[in-house]
Image 1 (cartoon, helix red, strand yellow):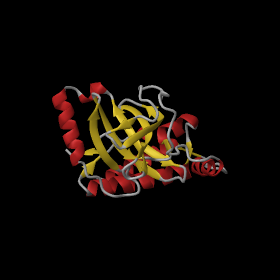
Image 2 (cartoon, helix red, strand yellow):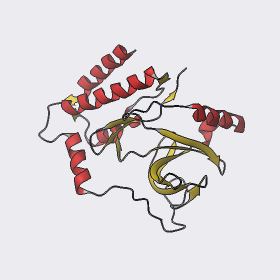
Image 3 (tube, helix red, strand yellow):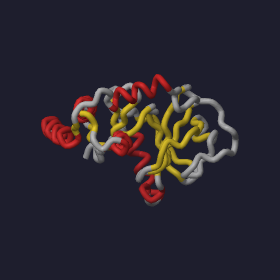
Amino acid sequence: TFIGIMVGIGQWVRSRSAPAAPSTALESAKQEEKQSPPRFVPAPQVPGSQAAGAGLAAGAKLAGRYEVADLLGEGQAGAVYSGFDKKLSRVVAIRRMRPELCGSAEEAGKFLEAAGKLALPNHPGIVGFFDAFEEGGSIFLVVDYVDGKPLSRMLEKSKRLPSVDCLAIAIQACQALDCGHRGGITHADLKPGNIMVDKRGGVRIADFRLSR
């Protein structure tokens, strides 16, 4: 399986590679970190101000411990917010799942049960999973907060990345996938949107699924 992944990644790298530029995309990301402060600061928001898109108010409390902050983006699975875990004093990412993905109450219950049993390996290249709960008729997932952007957004800005960046991303992604596979967990939907690149050039894979 690992050899197959490496072959696939190699083909992807060749299709995406371009002549190396003096300043690579990963180096640019590092410069952004030096020039700008962190996007999220866990401080109280103005009560009642609305985070765009999914209707959650900035400063809203969830499950008695999570405080919602900024809307980071929306995708097929739902809206993702930065937030703060007041119980453990850490910054997290909170995903509000789209109702149609969870189906009936019975299916939602099975989803929460499966999520509760998901034990991801502790690896720097895997976005950690912390919590799953239902509140107000919606299902929420709480995971590691990554101060960066998905690879898909990087490719929107630059259709082709320098080959050195492609190799760096591919190697880190393969290491994370290999760790997951050794721990009995596979990824059912690996794509650029699920490959996060932080401001230091580190790669982290999100949205692992249970092995089948």
